[in-house]
Image (tube, rainbow, N blue to C red; front, side, top):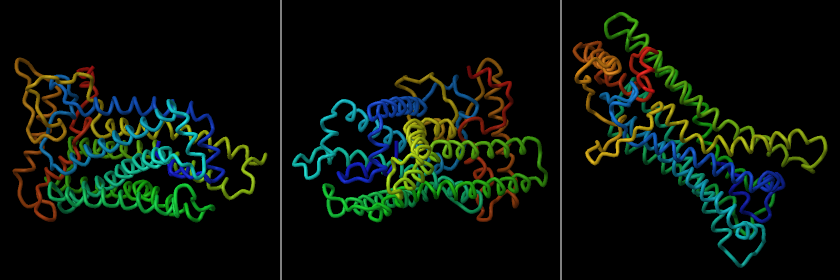
Length: 402
């Protein structure tokens, strides 16, 4: 899981609250982290693998869309996978090499490998999950710009500079402040650790606070865009707008479920740090709440990778296309259009073609078809239609995906 307490634990003179949660049932906690991260890693990779066309859900049929947003979703999944890899590596060493872990507790230890492992694994986890937060923020910005102004393949370079630059900068700056003047003799007190906690939770809080606002404004703009194309708001357009709202709701729901326990746990631990004796009897409920949220973090933080893919693309199924002739690009990053099933009517394909007809109708209109900068309205809407079930569909179609 991703917590600044992992870096703080690398200091031999760590604070009492960090010592309290890290050393409580460490083997059981590491086993939970390995199980959660392992499941998330396997299913996330499974979600990203190409699938056979006949087994794709409705929302997985490739539709025309700007490339930047689909690339951002793919990068978020990659960051989550790399973060889970770091959790598995760290927890496995914790379980399999207890002597190495015990060396972290020795001040002025001549063996540097325990500290190298502790700092390196903690920074790996923080870096990639922090990058995932920044990319999630960029996704909200990107879909808003697509509808309001413009965004596309050219902006992806800017997003790379922002996300990786800020992730690396804040990670290095926070760790440098934490381990000053050296890892083996970190400063005592809470003041030197505050910059590290701020740099860790800044992108997390940014997504929790700003993304809902950006998504709400995007939905409002899409509704106006759909109404303005023909001057009416049909049932099909209303359904499409509802699917977009549900998509954004799923993304934020997953983020809140997986990462809100971190904020709660950190608040509880900070409260314990300010007490003279964290083992006092009147703090028992606070200690129990901190331990409960700590173990919840160990389960939900790694699972965010798999849950994100469900929010982005829906369940893509187990039918992996292992053919050497398979298409090299992912289904949700394709620019081709789906074709009707030969030899019979396929309701899933038919509904997809209905959506494409709906988009094509918008392309054939003039004037009110364009966003403020002349961008086709269909492109602005199609960027929000990727993933699970974001075309027009009925529950009747669900039986074809089993």
